[in-house]
Image (cartoon, rainbow, N blue to C red; front, side, top):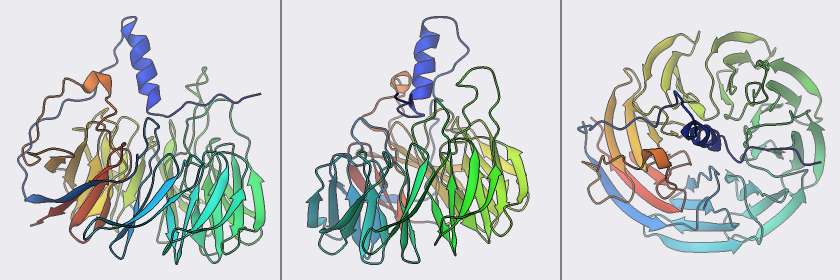
Length: 402
């Protein structure tokens, strides 16, 4: 019997919006942007096409940048390596299978998961497939690699660990999955001898990396409400580990800081997200399920500021860049927000000739257009930020920070 899955959490507001259009509703459209005067200059360095991106799928296929080589994968299974200094193609590999997860680079090997239930290892210098291993179902989250192991989390609640060099299976485990879940999974994390994985039942579990033995487990969110939708408590946002603390957040649940050593919850607060967070030495920057951005004190979870200028705009997970966080949205904009104050200080738009003063015609808001959608978290190198839209259009910007 097939388990019902939402094609993406992004579809949930669309479904609700459609239902609301047939009757009276209090649902509101995405917030229209207000003009911003950039407080520093941002120069577009280059723009080129990298595969087909996510296509019409809601996949966060974030590329990997290392030593001026940009490694990317699109939904059709085309893996590419480009030299960003001249945008020359070093190699291209066609896997002949649809891909669901972003790439993970470790040493000389790239790893990814496919929609058909395979984990694939690729040689970074040549693009040659080293090995592929069967897993239980589709893989949407980036594999975790460390200490000679690679770990994949599947959408059916299974987790697999393999020998990173030859793809030999080491151990596997499975959690019971609710009948209806969001389409997405939190990426596993390897920290020392632990594998951390979050599941659709609201649990965070720490496994022994070598044996798969459960070291500890904690319930981060409890299902509440009468309807199936109200009881969704998936943990789809990626876990962040910092200073021996794991930070994890659930949809319709809580953000929790969990001790790696004991599994005890240090603090938690009521805030929900399926998108994710970034962490610096002082704060946690969370994009909640309505794309409101919060800065929370890392030691206790107390809110320091919140920013609602991107409300309901399907913001990406934030990336740290200098003294700012940067996020993309569904209409192709990148937004710079100051870490200390939450002030929106700059904005550019992909595929725009006048990105310093972008066109703020937001008539398309109610349609959630796919043509300009930024799904993948931007990546950074020095003062340069690289963003990719859902169709593979990739652009690099250099910010002259004050």
